[in-house]
Each structure stands twice: as C-alpha cells, then as structure tokens.
Length: 314
Ligand code: GDP
Image (cartoon, rainbow, N blue to C red; front, side, top):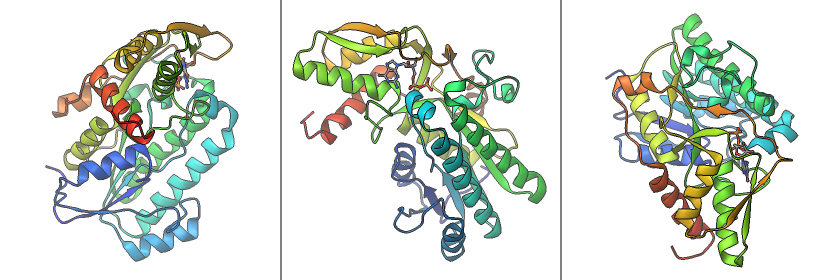
C-alpha cells in the first residue's frame, strides 16, 4: 500500500456533485475523517478564500472533484464557464494545497482530454498527440492543465499528487436537465416522461451511431479510493468500464429499464460529437482494480434514485 487512509483528514472538494457525493459515500467505509465545505463556507473560485480556508483546515489529502461540468450543448454554448471556472478552481486548490503541505492530492479529469481521433481504446499516452473534439475543448483544456499542474508539483516539489481520468459517468446526483445534461440522464428523463405521457416517440440527438463508454459514479468512487491507497506515479490513470455501446443501444437499454417502448427519432440538427470514446483502462485493471456493475444494473440504480428525487416511489 502506498498511502494508508487510517486517521487521515480527507477533503472531498465538490462533495455536492455526483462524483464528490459518491466519493464521500465510499470513504464512509474507511477509517478516515471526511471533510466537506459548501459554497457558503468557501467559494472555490476565490483565491484568497481558498487559501484562508486551507490554512485553517489543513487536510492531509484532497480528492479534487469540484468542477464546472456539462454535456455537449452546455460546453458549446458557455465556453467561459467551462474554461475559466475550471482553471481557476483547480489552480486555487492546487496551490493552496501545496502551500499548506497537503501530501496527497487526487485530481479528476475526464475522457474528453484526449484527441478527437485518438487510437481506440484510448491509452493514457495519447494525451496531447492531436486536436481535441471542438464541442468540449474548453473543458478539456482546463482538465489537461490540471493534470499538468499535478505533474508540475510532483516534478518541482516532489509532491505525491496523482490524476485519474474517468470515462462518461452517471448515477445518483446526476444532472437531469435536458439542456445541460449528458446523454444518459437526458435519455432516462425522456423515456420516463414519455412513459408518463404515453408519447409515441423519444427524440435522440444526432445520428445514434457515436460510441460511448459509461461508468456508474459509485464504481468510479471505489476505483478512486483504490488509486488513493495504491497508486503513486507521474502519469494519470484512465478509469473506465471497458464496455462501449452506441447511443442507439444506450437508448434501447434505457427503454428496457424504464419499461417503455417508444419509437426513436434521431434529430440530425444536434451534434454527434466525437465518433468513439472508449478508454483503455488496462493500467488500472493491471494494478488490481476491475470491479464494476453492468450498464443495465447501473441504469436501474440511477433510475431508482431519479424516481426518488422526483418523488415517485420506485
Ligand atoms: P459527449 O460524450 O461529450 O459527446 O457528451 P454527451 O453525453 O452530451 O453526448 C453524447 C452523445 O449522445 C452525442 O452524440 C449526443 O448528440 C448524443 N445524444 C443523444 N441524445 C442526447 C440528449 O438528449 N442529450 C445529450 N446531451 N446528448 C444526446
């Protein structure tokens, strides 16, 4: 074991988000103290506030799950939010962590950091080997800077800071707003609403042919705790399920879970985004983590939480 969590004070930055929430749930079964701070306590875009809070709190380790996130349309329409907010949050936290001698830092990126036409499955070393997918490059550039930031502190100051790159995530606490969400929660809501209203069709953006890989956020959290304990290295580590489906197949699986069979209509006026995005997670699997539920099981769990949040008994 590289890092023993016993007795450590671990700050989960972004605990109100889907990933941060999952990490807090997962850390509850470790012998550590979990620290969280809402926006009312510390505004992560405010450099002075972050430094003051960190100096006062002095965590031993940080899981950096705070970020401005969104789907294809939100990224495309609000580039400043995705580039500026993410850059400022990660630089504030990283530098305050360094100044306060935080020994362990786990930075989280995303699979969109890789070039649009990266080899598939995408290995870690394809980072910065080609142009990015333009629809989400704002977010990607900020996340690439975050990876480099961890590496820079490791190189210059010997910090044992690491980065993990999750594939497309879903699960409890996801964003179900149809304008800003990712595809899985969007289609879950669309099928749910079609079932309620008896609509004959469900609109799927794009052609339905792009391939995507999905991971339940609780499986990600389990992998992150594994990395926190076991991994020390300069290179970032991919975290994926290893299973990919077309957007059409995803829609069909969601239809099955929701229990409603509607005709799929493909809206060609909406972008497809990158044609394929499967991570090569063999490094992580080689280290010994290869747990995770099936897509159907995962969607069923997400749907149960969605119904609960909507006030419908599952
Ligand atoms: P991406 O993985 O960064 O491209 O982001 P998304 O999860 O937003 O989109 C993935 C794919 O799903 C794209 O090809 C979208 O066009 C497609 N898609 C189909 N229906 C929807 C929908 O209702 N919402 C979103 N966000 N994407 C959709």
